[in-house]
Length: 138
Image 1 (cartoon, rainbow, N blue to C red):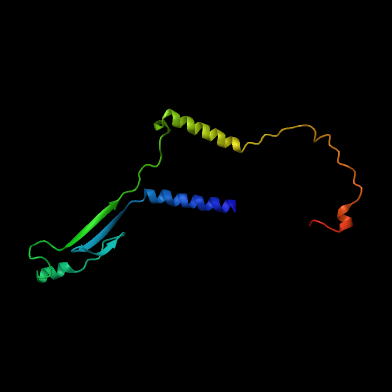
Image 2: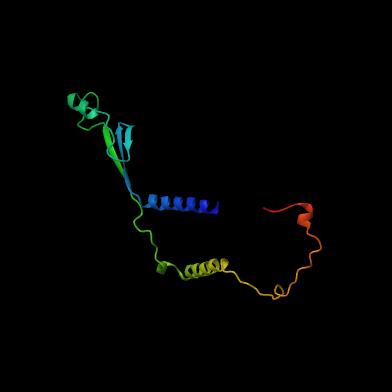
């Protein structure tokens, strides 16, 4: 279970890094104040008012301006992911060093040798309780 959770967390973090570096353009087509179409990949579909405007100008304003507008929004991703350790302040460097050393010490085990285990003699077996009760671990 623990390995499964680690895999899920690492996959989510990889997606987060990928999505933060990904840049894309959102294209939108408005006819007046109404959104007709928006597209992330490619161009947005038009409403066809440009063709009608060329035939007759009664569909839009009488002026030469079109009532339709195309809008493109660029969403830029992050270019640099690596932060320099030199940019950290002295207190931040100290915190990172202490955190890393304490984290590493969590996984180091100290074996204390008391010596009393070497001279321990178990008590004598009076009866074999497992055979008497017919209980066996398989």
